[in-house]
Image (cartoon, rainbow, N blue to C red):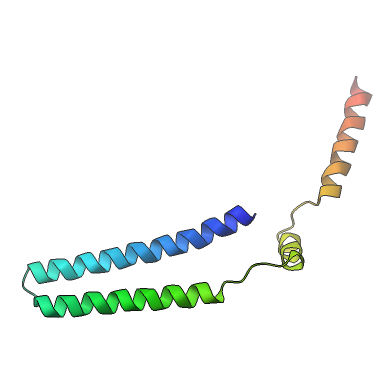
Length: 101
């Protein structure tokens, strides 16, 4: 479960980085086509970089580790089976298998 949460967070960071790269590429293309001056392109690139950095810092400052209780609540909400429930199912399955043999 923790790995899935990490993957979600990393996907968000990855998409933000991709967006930044695409924005920087767009600025470079506009400069190359003459729609922006080199100075305007540099300024836009710096602003894009600054905005990306601010958003990344804002996002990471809001992320806090889950406590055991929060994780337990999350798993309960998602209706995951507990270790005890799985052990009970295994025991019942073993009894059924013994009956059929």
